Length: 209
Ligand code: HMH
Image (cartoon, rainbow, N blue to C red; front, side, top):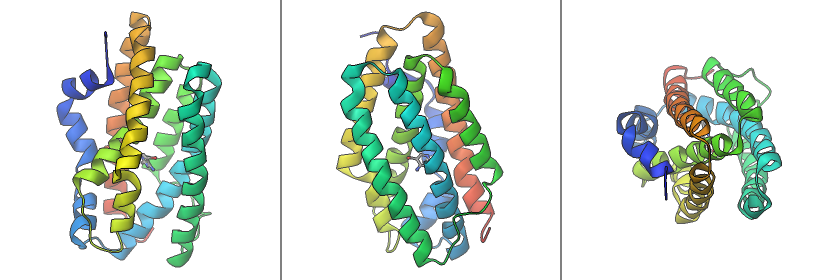
């Protein structure tokens, strides 16, 4: 097989590390994260997932039919995830109708921009977004309650298997892609790493907003 997602990770090990390890996650692992920091992340991540769901739907419109099963499974999981976020925000008395913070706005603009990208680029970005979360929460596991539930959502073997399916689909698309699309896929992968890091940072420095 030619170019693969694993090669992107290997080539950009430092960026990968910065996207998947952060004091925010360490604070969730040990329980030292502040209530406001966590609640702020929770609300912003809900707002992110709303737009990520739209992105998932757009990827589906570009994907080959052989890739539908995995993507439709992902969309179903997102349906549950959105109601799970609403329940958690409700428990913490947080409104979900607040404005997106800058890091969230930028991430959502990135996903919008990819709407018309070639499928190999979209598939790589979609995999990268889920893969970073999978590794980030897994590497910081086990977490103390109540954060353990969050670590299990994205750090579980089941979510890992889903990310594996996304990786194989992205690899397949990359393998058949023209060089220009491969180069764009790598550039957007790097952009995902940067945006993920900024998202953790946003939650860490803006408690209570
Ligand atoms: C910021 N990246 C961010 N939030 C998420 N929920 C995921 C990735 C995974 O869906």
